[in-house]
Length: 146
Ligand SMILES: CC(C)(COP(=O)(O)OP(=O)(O)OC[C@H]1O[C@@H](n2cnc3c(N)ncnc32)[C@H](O)[C@@H]1OP(=O)(O)O)[C@@H](O)C(=O)NCCC(=O)NCCS
Image (cartoon, rainbow, N blue to C red):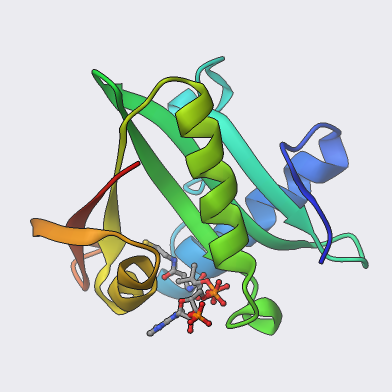
């Protein structure tokens, strides 16, 4: 399995955002650019990119500080050809390791309903129902103490 790193080069950033767009935005007819967040380039935001040998992104995710000793994971996405092969686990564990090294003691995230079993498998518990994205995707707030 290739190693996870933050995106560095313009090509790596392009691959990173392409996967976000293709998995998390395009299927709901969202415009290009909607996969980018204002704080993506904040110095406190940590990005995880796992590149496939062909150069496209196999898995991505990000972490930002969201409260006292708390981090939030957002934009977790695994390429369809790589789903179910441990990439999501590797990305999430990379972000949790980063959270620990930043002194954070818990991670929260808003999980799409269909991804809840994945996060439960990795130690997260449902806290409460959250928002509905694009009018159709229910989310649940989940939390894990590190
Ligand atoms: C959800 C997602 C990130 C998971 O990544 P993945 O690479 O497919 O998951 P992994 O292969 O790393 O799975 C890790 C563990 O979770 C389990 N798991 C993954 N998805 C699961 C599911 N839907 N139901 C039950 N278990 C699941 C795996 O079986 C594996 O368990 P194991 O360690 O016992 O083998 C990925 O499937 C994805 O991008 N889905 C579409 C976009 C999405 O929903 N993103 C999350 C937004 S909140």
